[in-house]
Image (cartoon, rainbow, N blue to C red; front, side, top):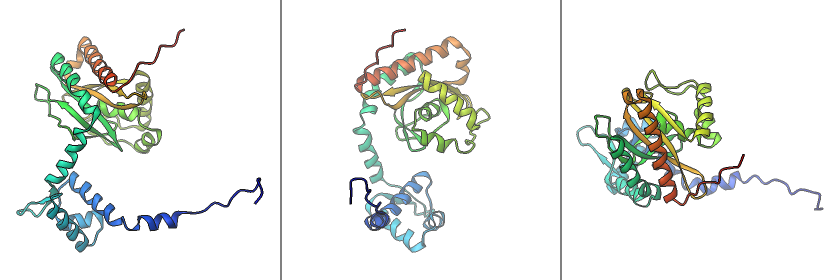
Length: 274
């Protein structure tokens, strides 16, 4: 073969298929766990949902129950996540640098403005809370591990804005789901908003996920200046009618996010001279 000739392309798909064939059962098991994490089900309902043979579903569920990954309610027959899964998830948070760095700064922000405070990161098309301070009001509480839809509330808008382009396009390929009458569902309107958020680095929303609830969020960056999550401060939406309070909420969110970013090794970039 001469220098100008190119080697023929080799299709390695058959090799990949053989390499992962033995892991099909593992993938099926993970799908079962993820499905039951969203909603407990009986074996029959799970088999129908995932289009599995009943015997396959029952055998897998029995194994996971015996190992402590699932629990079965003897009354309803429904399977739900077990203690062993909780222990594994807890290990993730105990080693989570972002969650550990966020704690004291969330507390400061929450105490200063009497609001809820969260540290959040994106996973696939969801927002996951990794640390939280409960609000002193009757706003619904949020615990670490709680997931929210990407693209709704201040945290969801902001993390969608800084998500990879393919993630944004996947979310905006069709109208977004409406949670309240204030939710942005039009993809074009959301695209315009995301462009603005990428310039500002913070977001404010009100009542688009839950009525009577508003929030402000600001991005958290790592040592490589990459956005890895955000701080979200949650208040009663009526408080946002006061522009001075709204400005304070945004300022405190940005301050907390910057402090966490610095703790993670981030350094502000020098401002370009005019």
